[in-house]
Image: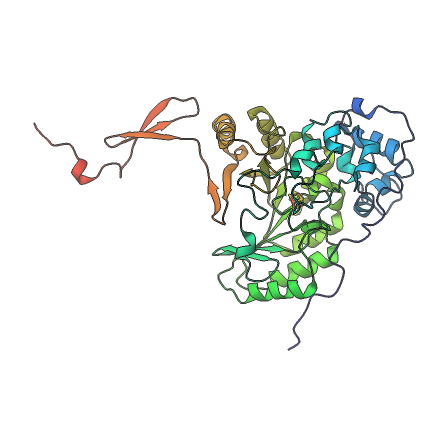
Length: 440
Ligand code: SF4
């Protein structure tokens, strides 16, 4: 029997060279005064590129900074990748960079996460405000290069739970399969910043993937494979399908999951051809990395709608970030918005202590306060599970606001979302030795 192997198609996404060659500031529109996220639907005619919604802000941005690009270019995910903003000089043409953004002190020699922002995501950034939440998530600042106590290059010790390169096997019944080190846009707080990007240590190769798949094939306890990276949806349809079909045929693998930020930073990637392909590999789930309500644009809604229409259950994973989403109001707006675009809030992560992350990390009390502010005040579908991924490889540990506040004989004392105490007659609440004596 001939063993099928993945073919040698490129692992990196096609056409990522080219940079900002077409970036030109031609018009004099004050982008800071345009409204992003405002619904303004328009379609291209006679194009091979699928129709896609665009927001008003994206339209102004394209005309100002990419005047040679037409709607079809803008809505072509490969064009978006080819024209990513990849250095501070080019970013300085688009944003009014602050001194702190320009000045980076490299005191953490191991920090090497590159800069890359898709034109689409750049169109959501406020060019005059360095404190704008979305801007803080993707533009490097000097604090990123300061190492603080407790930080580590691999705080979750994923590398110690890696039986073969590119695969993490921490929990008994599931594995994490890293299929690329490439992302459309790099998040400054990325847990895998040691791996991703050109300077990262993740070297994707066919032989490595073959070994990882062989490991899964020989591990009958694995019933769930999370495909991640980097971002798997930056792979071509053909490459992704080869992977999915190989994994789908493993009898003991009951379902597949994809972890991605593409619907947020490169929604144009969610083409009808991609969703047609993905729906062949059910049960397939998807975790999407949303961070802030400003990411809930018509484009992201369109992308998530296409995935949901393909029958893919969508969940969101959000990292709690200081100065970005660390308030009840912001988080509630995000969770409500996610439900409207058919994405179920899944996890809220405490930010991992990677190198140079102190400016992003909030006290754990802040996360508890946010969950307390959501629970009971909105539908349970809108309340994610707040977790700390335990440093040292302990896995995700859920953190809950205190709801059991004590016992009174057989009664459990419970605190509701308003802070009121209620009793529940708990059948197992009292041991025999604790039973009150009958003195009558
Ligand atoms: S998309 Fe995910 S893997 Fe890529 S930089 Fe952001 S957090 Fe890291």
